[in-house]
Amino acid sequence: MFLSAGAGLAAGAVGGAGLVTAANGATPPHQGAPPQAPGNGRVVPASFRAAHQPGILTGPALACLVAAFHCRDRNRAALAGTLRALSAEMDALMTGRDPAPAPAGQPPADSSLLLGQGRQPVLVTLSVGASLFDDRYGLAGRKPAELTPMGALANDRLDPARTHGDLLVLIQADHPDVCVHTLRRLTRAAGGSLAPAWSQDGFARPDPVAMAGATGNRNLLGFKDGTGNPDAANAALMDQVVWVGAGDGEPEWAVGGTYVAVRLIRLFVERWDRTSLTAQERVMGRRKQSGAPLDGQKETDVPRYADDPDGERTPLDAHIRLANPRTAGPEKGMLRKGFNYARGLDADAGLDQGLVFVSYQRRLANFRQAQERLKGEPMEAFTRPEGGGFFYALPGAPDPGGYLGQGLVES
Image (cartoon, rainbow, N blue to C red):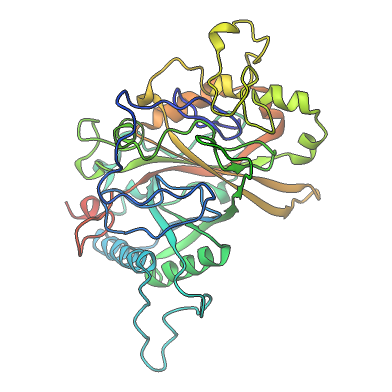
């Protein structure tokens, strides 16, 4: 499986669907929403104090680090303290505030990794996993309705050591060292309350072939990544696609959050590199250089499946056709971003490279349905999901003194 942003709206892990917009066109972003990352993927400063967390509608940035943790807190009050400490540190990091100096004789308050570099913009997004809602903290009755552990899906070979977690942090920045610095600051702020579960760093490579409406990133298969994502600047559309609303049957505290699917997808790049360009493009359903669908001329062209019922132009089992058959509206969609990763060599001296896939959706069922459509696709010969998990991105903390997850642990 190699998921496009699909599920009837967006697409583009390697190709994808056309852009669906609200009937009245683009609307201004939510008040307090983070600015949109420019096409070159660079992070711009964002406020922590917003109705929704920063880092969801932006990106992908040039560098990322995703890290999962197990909580060691003994009770809910201690967990609240951990969430409060993490929120305060996230606020300081994103607003560029230096930590208070440590008392004499104590470890320094900062690693000095970025010493002399000035303010380095960073985005941090905090999510919770299904395991946080076990019997440790009495939160079982407050679990989001669709949040479950991520079981084996299409073509999966999940490694337990790289899957699930109580908390998930996604860090995005312009440089890898900023991500590392941020992770160390967050880990220090949490003290001994968090035990690392797994992490993966990643990067995005801006695509020099740019045009209006085109994506600015390519994955390690050489195809444009993120084609057809919904317009994150369209607030009405994001309410349909991403943000959980008051009438969605979710716990009250969860309104304003979103479901998160994270997939660590191994790409068998050596096998791919021995495959002809024609075969690659038919597997994807798109042209490699331009990102255009096989029946179009440019990336922003919408595939005309109705004119190709037998798959003569775009094969019926092409990735973009399965991921997004164009039979549903925006409420069935998702917003996704992808980061490349390279982990050196595996035990058999093969190139261990792949994609950190992250999608945000109002309903996790949208992601699951897309997975079902992709079972058995030709892309499975070149990919293998090996980790990740399902999580829930907490609503924002717009009020001074508030913290992420406050409604979950205090109400």
